[in-house]
Length: 224
Image 1 (tube, rainbow, N blue to C red):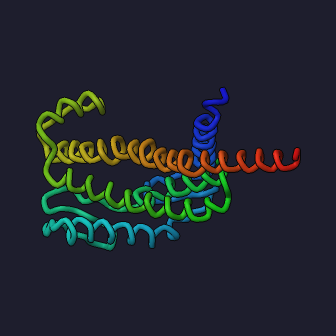
Image 2: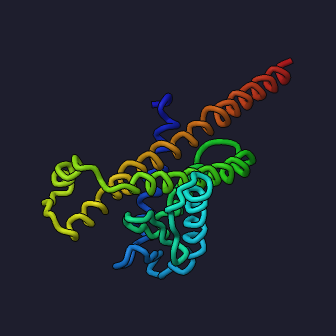
């Protein structure tokens, strides 16, 4: 088990955090509502929601040049003729920021290096989350393709009916394929794992080698 000790501890910390999060954090009847240990903390996330929405708007409208991209109410983003998307606390990456901080805080490695690596990684996670949201919004700029109808009937166990209500339902499902499924796993399993892997291979293991080398050198000096 020794060769797999590091990855096992990483996975254990991942699962421990998920357990704590599910135990302490809940959504209200409206998914916009954040409840932590029974307290409604939604108002504390408003600044983060608006900052995230503004950053996505700047990236898509100003940097990528999509002039038909709009923002209203400070947190609702949409392309003309597409569904609007509200940026709520679950879209800001707050959970992932807390998760990575928790994992690395209790993981092996020099504490002094964690003081700069954790903040740097959180900044990277924030930037990638902004890019994630921008890509999703660009993808759903156009209506879902025709082949998605049969896929969605199977995937979400629903039936296509040629009505406006059904069209909007399938459009939301098309959005959720990327927002809830594809990019969430990339964000969790991809970015967080890669950041941990960089820490493990570039910082933790070299630190262990240096510590062992120093220890051997000191023992050799004591023997002399």
